[in-house]
Length: 380
Image (cartoon, rainbow, N blue to C red; front, side, top):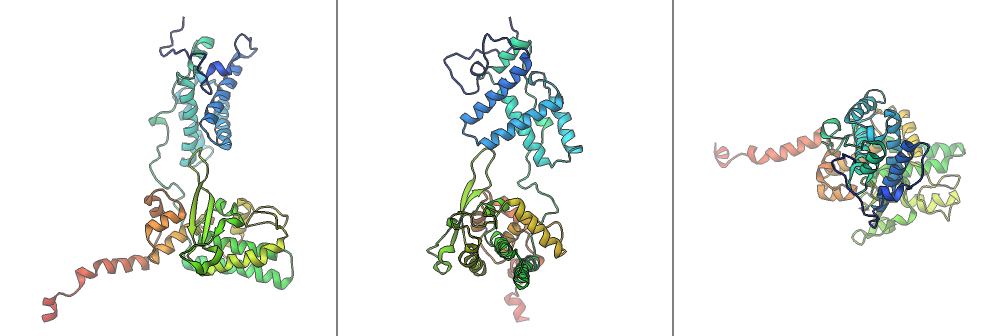
């Protein structure tokens, strides 16, 4: 008789996705019962997540993480302890040099699998107790996992472009087009595409992946800004998703005339010369495909290094600069929050790195009432 204190029997009529009785084959003698149990547990966890509507790539990534933890510990899930998590987390930080946010994400996936394995509704603890005389326990706790304390956990060195830097960068991108055209060499179309792409990232405050996945049809009209024509709004369909959720969409309003003119010229006069009329992508390659985020990053690094700009500047710095520069122009913070797709104003605030000149102007404006001469001062 098992002494497992939380023994629960799942009724055979209850078909809960991922339950042990649905994944284990009764009456079959396994040559390696431990391995068979692990595979059944992982298969059950996969079914449970799919039943919750999680994306396939999220499920695959989580399963891969659990299998890596299995390899690291060389123990079965019913033998895992919190100490294994301690050792593994230390190894990820000291040997693999992973960022705290990455380690926390890994710990989160491991916690989900651990909670699934001990949840009485799925019956895995009972199955392990019956088969091996022991059962899984909770291995992730507050004291051995990284807490999510900050809205932003990027590198402290990361910063936005200054106005002068972004101007130099975009001018350099335009120069590459002129050089390719004058030299009559291949690559002029790609250089023009890239120059326009970087302008779009900056003008619409986009992430690299959001920009790469844009289609021609994502631009639309804004009745309140008819002078922008068909480029008054941009439907960002692949915004950053929450863990396990589909991409979040947002509609970004156009605000800069020069950027609208640049993308209109690219779409109407340059893109057709790639010969990809039937391809939906806004940014196409000379081979007829869609440009990839890694290719955007590679071209960015080439331009940045050629200009000898600080290596702290990354593609995402243009998005930070978008928020910072519009803030300095007096654009409402709530509007910016909607533009960049932040749920909380605190996230937008972290993106804002206003210049000293702006801060001094705001300080003088704030102190003006207190420093203004009084009527008594005027009478002296």
